[in-house]
Length: 321
Ligand code: MTE
Image (cartoon, rainbow, N blue to C red; front, side):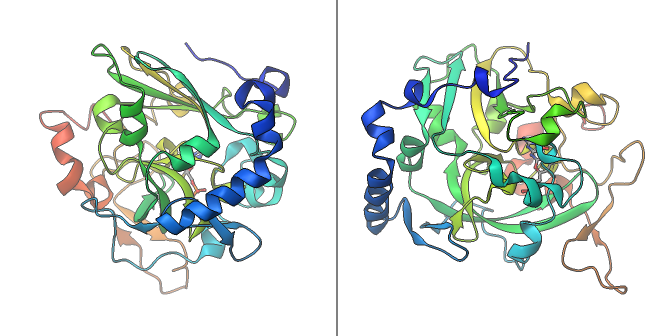
């Protein structure tokens, strides 16, 4: 069953998230985090256009640092899918400015021994920040290469101690009609939800991202934190996360509910399985848009087969798309 967060009235009050003296002193807290950057994690001085810089060290997770040239930051922050702000690629950059990311917390519940509500400040300190350069392949046939900052989702999941009966993870993202104009429409059944099998979520390449291009995430890219699952179509990478729930049964997901024939639960990047309305064999790399630019061949599991292929041993990925 989906848990709806239809409007701001249903959102947690700041005072429910963080003790009052703490959130009132948020500025001091951020300064403390800046100081902690000296030991390799946390927010530091201000980056390019006023965004806080986020320090990270290059990831040592196998496959986490593609050598491909990153997409221009301008393209990655102005060609977005974030339907809560509208369906046009330029809508998120245009309308996401009103999204309030402070205070922010993530509820973790369901089949875990240590459920709880985690304040963003605590999540920022939970594990050392790593830089990961991932390809992102959208189901629509375009791709980007993005230098993300974050740590493996597994590091958070292990903290809450999944129960033996937990098999799936559900991600729920913010749906605030006051600040997200798209939520007033009915393109999807809000809030946007996604899901992974627990072993997929525990794979070290599954990333909890807080930043990109050396800075905290811009709002249109899913601030203040999102999931990034590089071997799956981009829609699995849920933005502006507010809840993580561990379940025994497979959760419903927003795109699968909207168009089940087109969007399955697994959604592994697979050039051999066409979308019902178009081929998935090739992709357009954003930024390579000249008249003579060639489409690139799409790779199985978006090029991460060596790392994640064993998760799907014995499965028929044409049926389980
Ligand atoms: N998360 C939310 N909450 N809402 C969305 O509409 N779109 C998805 C995914 N996460 C989406 C979302 C899709 S279709 C893609 S391709 C990626 O975000 C795009 O991420 P980017 O805009 O940062 O490149």
